[in-house]
Image 1: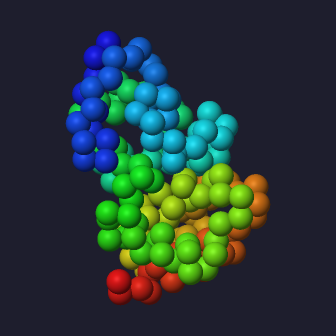
Image 2: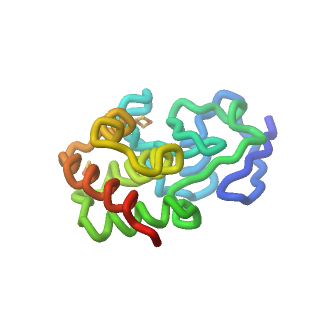
Image 3: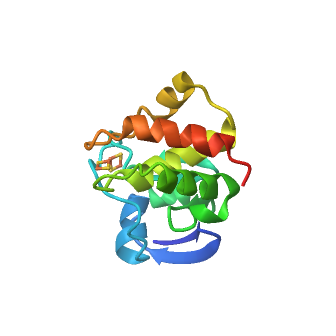
Amino acid sequence: MRFDLKVNGTPREVDVPADMPVLWILRDILGLTGTKYGCGVAQCGACTVHLDGQPVRACLLTVSAAAGRDILTIEAIEHTQAGAKVQQAWLDEEVIQCGYCQSGQIMAATALLQQNPHPTDAEIDEAMAGNICRCGTYVRIRKAIHKAASDDV
Ligand code: FES
Ligand code: FES
């Protein structure tokens, strides 16, 4: 079936089964490989993208559910004010270890700051709880979110 998607502001038409997850489309059809496959069952957060501004798991988001809505991926997050601050804070605090989970972490952190510009530790922990990091970078993630929240860039 044909579906009209809007990915990072660009209209994209795909011809795929209606139940294909958006993660497959991003990575295998559109070549946007910044969004990662971790678990495939909405348990790790590695595949987090924004759908109409909300963080969602692309591994379970079907193309039919995403059609006609705004999909934003890590490749374009720098073009949002919060995303630019988050990415700079990630660099400043040297958050990343292996990096595999980090595009999902940045997408979740950006969504948090867009909804809550000055989150507490508890609010950060709650918002980020679904994003797993095997390298245990949680302390630096929290610090970087506070830094991005305090940045007037
Ligand atoms: S790959 Fe989607 S949540 Fe793990
Ligand atoms: S930085 Fe390695 S899994 Fe998070």
